[in-house]
Length: 193
Image 1: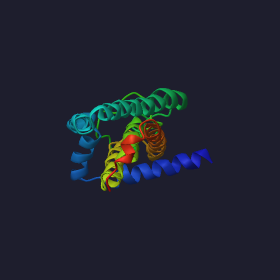
Image 2: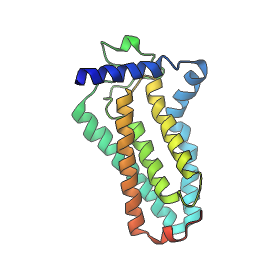
Image 3: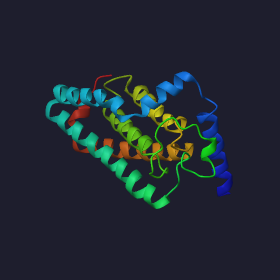
């Protein structure tokens, strides 16, 4: 049964990593998964949250960092070190099938920390802002999904790694979002649709 699941996972991986291969994705998706690409966005959000919401904005920034820390800690330090799944680009029996488009890295594959971290931030922000900004939901989900799928396309994660990382991130983001809602209810009383 497990071998069948691994085979399905590898087939979906190949459909994305090889089947979607084209010059535009070869250029774009490695950029999308690079953390430095998003540094200007993060800086903008920090300034925006603090400037727009004052002390509550500082709490939003702090809770964003806590959300990231929790998802990254669980994914990178707890799950990866327990499961120890080899990345597709490092798997001796499989890597000859992989189009490797970035440096492979020596860490483990399950779960994808990129997926966990970006989905945790996306869902934390969705809980906070979906009623204030009508486009928050689809923008956050699209952003996290593009970064997560990029992990498969560049050859560093299997789809199951990304799926489980995304699920972990969603749970963490919802949990920290509702924690924020519980302790800072005043922020949600002045919502605009």
